[in-house]
Image (cartoon, rainbow, N blue to C red):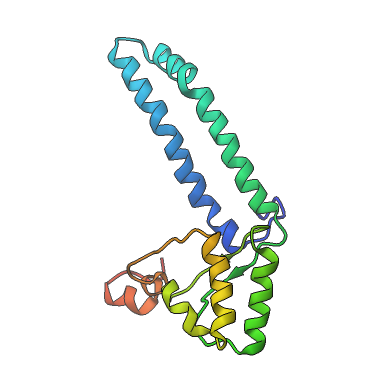
Length: 171
C-alpha cells in the first residue's frame, strides 16, 4: 500500500484478509474440478487444463468484479467511518450534525458505523427522540448490519491477557 501511495485506513487494513479469503473462495471450485478430472483418469496437466477451461473464465470474471468493487472503495475520497457510536449521549449540536450527515448521504453514498451497543439501544443516545428516530429510520432503510459476538478484539490483544495466558508479548 505504501508503494502505491495508498493511506493506511481501516478499509485498507482489511484488504489483505479479504484478498486471502476471496482467493481461497475462488481456488476451491478450481481444485474440486481438478480432482474430479483426476478421478476420471486424466493426467495432472489434462485435469488442470480442463478445470481452467470449464470454470476458469467464470472465476476470472468474478475476480474482476470483486477487484472493481474494492477499487471503488479504495479510491473513494469521501467514505466516513463513525467508530464507537453510542458511547455517550449526543448533545443538540452533535445530533444535528449527525442528522445532516445521514440526510446528505441517504441512498447516495456510504459510510460505516461501529458500535458496542445493539441498534435497539441507539435511540437512547439522542437528546431529541423525534430527530433520533428519523435518523435511525433512514439508517435502517438502507443498511446492512453485521453483528459480531464474542470476546473483544482489543481484549484479545491486550498484553495483560496475553501474559495471563502464558503468551510471549514480545513476539
